[in-house]
Image (cartoon, rainbow, N blue to C red):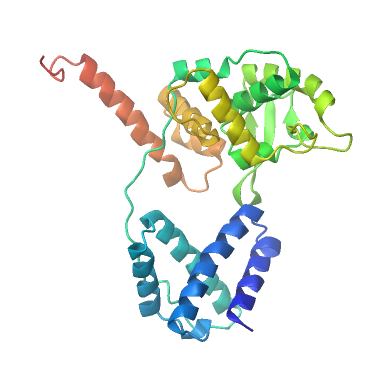
Length: 298
């Protein structure tokens, strides 16, 4: 089987055995095709001929071409998983990526909007069907901390108005039930009435476009950006910022890291712990502003 043939087989394994999302599979394919191009460039005939020296050179070449440490980490992670699969299929005898470390990237704290600016952003004017839809989208993103793909994948039956919850299918097809806040419920109730004007008869999606079909992630990004400008928010606003704000505001109030982890659907609590850094920053600012020994003299 050819180099690319093994990649095709691996992607099918991800799709049908591991049931990963189409976007995740697309990302794996893209990263492995970069590695494949490198192998062809340096004359490596088969995956079994690739050793850790080649992988280190691949990583160094990517870095010299201006790839970020984060991108190289992702490429090596994809290659590591791919070679685990090749070992399982007995096509290779060892995983050459295991001993290779990616360059360390600077830790970036996620951005967030404070409660006042979030309230201003959510207070969008108008009573058309489009406004009703956009208001419900913004409220639900913030109320339940959904990922963008989780929001666009929602069907009408996924929201239980009686129990005030939404059923979400997250990364790795993992399901979770997340509470929906009062304002989001009100916005969803209004949108459900307007949805009948826009949705095609057979469409199951909760949120639809002007064409009556499931709204795309790109369209949601555009609408979020539109309302941020209209509401005078002086920072870059994108759908994932609502999730960051949701987590930050909950953690500031509750200090329940495990609870926030469950609500976000993080498999590993270390992913959630980044928000503790944001919480500490907030406390440090309060300390600097209020503690007599911390105030800077004019």
